[in-house]
Length: 419
Image (cartoon, rainbow, N blue to C red; front, side, top):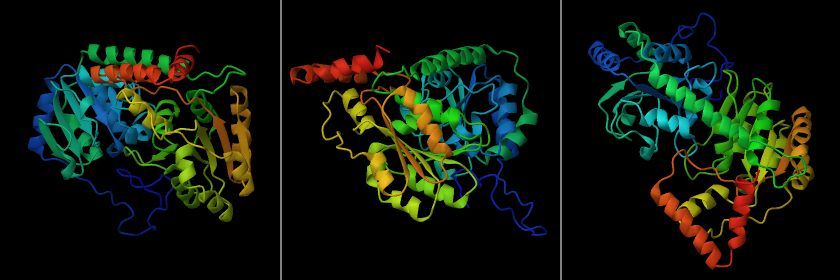
């Protein structure tokens, strides 16, 4: 059985045997009546509530949407909550944090109450400083771990919201929600405009690759993504629909998780399409698992974002004003190595090759790998840039020029400005 934090199991997991005393058992944990009454009073008195949901919202989609409707509140989702929150949700305004975008950031910074549901969101710099913060989590040790709380409630999200909703008064003022939704539409439009592929133009934008994967993958596909830039593109361009799943490490600094997670998902769910979004650095660490795919005849599809660098580390170094060091990769031809291992190995060097190659891989009866040559200098900036980051980037450009690496500045401009 494949399970995730905050989730019981995939929806098609084996159920307890009929007649079992556990067949209908649904463990729940709910705050006390006194705590719920205090929370309802706070929310009813607040004009601008923003909800931040995480993996703990699994199984509580209907209650979450009803809560947002009652409070006229935008919903920001953490990465682990994306697959449980994003779909069929007219209140969703995207993500914040290092891999998010502006609309989620502003929805949280402009609220007077932030309601955190089932998330241990790690990036303190993206939490509001002046708003009241309430956190609901089934894990008591997480309460207040990242931020100062005005109220911390021990409970699972579904049970808590079911008990809370009858206590709330319908909010009429939707100005905060409308502003957040308008910002989201603008941010989403900007992201979609980056996911373009002009025929013959090299290198390929990785956003375009992720968008093509999203369009071609099955409605119930299971995705896995390596840390770093593959997680960024998965967060921004893979659309969840209530049937798809998204697996990842989602821990800063870890690597090489996409392929082994895909192996586990495919082995436990042989009838599902499994697609791994791999970084070249992550795949290189576990190349031996290509043989595992062949040995066990697991039809995992790998899409390799090859930029010959530890790209997210390079971006962090640029933001700190440092010239990148020891981040370049001397990669092999991954497609040919896959072929040698008995997989279908394909390479996409231009945008017009991306769709046909991925289509062919997805249709292949067996494991397949598509190596895509993407831009090394693609920027994946967070939703807000600090003064220190701006200063650091300026220092990087100055140092690059003074050290004879001014061509990197030109490459940055070509990739990110002249599309």
